[in-house]
Length: 288
Image (cartoon, rainbow, N blue to C red):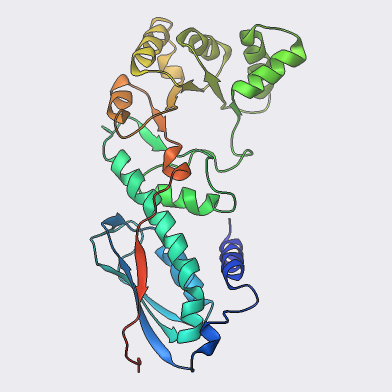
């Protein structure tokens, strides 16, 4: 998304909250104030540039004290904002909501990424809030993770429902026939493609058929180890990337990392977001 498109999206967010006008803010006399955005808990900061851009849309000036990717402690000032009181307060909730959500995603991402040994990368999924995907994915990258696919046109990923639909069209109950059909069609147009599988033997079949990445859906670490053994025995391990996906949490991610995969995708970092508590505080004095 271009900077112009990003600004348009931020403008839409702001318009959604303001509606036809901030009727409470309109009660205020014209005055310039200083606002401080403060985090109430430790966090990896993300989205501060977007928050600043939202305030600037209403003529405010911003000074960023904690940039994206930095670690903030409780009660740290992330940004100072100076401007007309009515304009600043009209932006408050929109800016804080985005900053809170993105910082929550970045904080959780960094926590999980720091638990990995270095072989496997941490990846987000497309389990994002509609309208917020670019911001959610950016927050993941700020936290040390990887975006994976942003949209369906980014890469071929043959998932279980694609396989089921192809099997129905081919009038077969053999999912491997459907996998072969889809991989054959994909390889005519694309050099890389991912296939989702549900068993070690299906993973081996997908590798033999030409998949370049294999998603091991809801595999246990033990099943992953078995899959890797099969691929090594067939001299195929170095020809494919392995992605672990499904029910991976802070409690078991180390086991998945130790199993030897190349990618670990965690939908919860963008699906089950716990926002960071941030607030805008305005001293009870006029700013000159």
